[in-house]
Length: 308
Image (cartoon, rainbow, N blue to C red; front, side):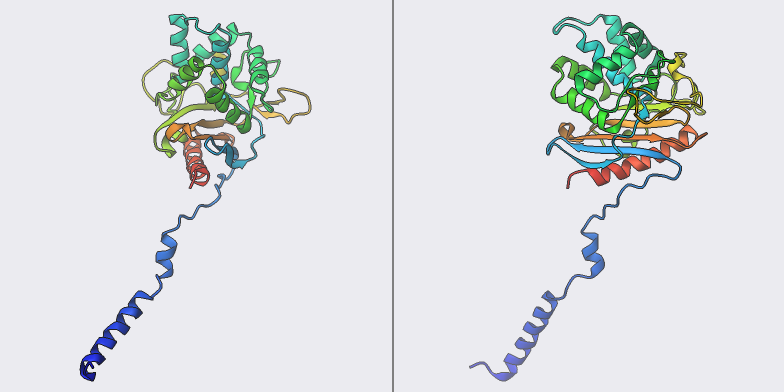
């Protein structure tokens, strides 16, 4: 039998050990182990629509006003490229001059390249063909009074997601690889001297593939990015201050007055997420201020919509 004087210290030690192991973690420590995700906050004075689609689950993880219609600005260049490539017979080679135009249009958002394809493809007819092919619901060609202004094509976040899904899952491999290959190598400086690394490129880590859009900031930015020439195509001019309906009758009008800034693309390994953020910026907004607002919103959208 163990002497009492030896048992007492041992009992006290065991009691202390048990007490230490049963102490609950402080509330602050428990909270820090969980990520608190807040709903994205649209900046004051900005009209926005956004959507995140998870290709692994086949479902949208985040959606806000996804059928609201915006003028496309340069996002329509995806549709222009898609129409040109799918109008060609499978397996036929693309002329070198057209390959260069596609590269400049998709990587550096070259307006003159887009205008060349737009005129060659029948202008508004391009949008009509792609709408039918993909099954877009909200998109439509520019107003009849401005047939040359491809940037006034109407689109929605939902339709842009459908377009990326079509490219990834239904387009011919050579079409998919050419378009997305260029979007994976989007240059920081567009050929009109605007810095197009706002939104996804600044808010989301690589890998990504992006097609950006901007309109209503004039033909030359306040701070030039790079040293390439500015475009003089009609689609790059500032908005005229009018609103017009595009597409079928009964649809809400598309605002052609306020500046727009859009970021769209694929993010994550295996292009898991399709992320689209479309914005109508405050009247008279600067490009730098608009880019900062859109990037902050995109960061929130990606954080709220990514898988966990």
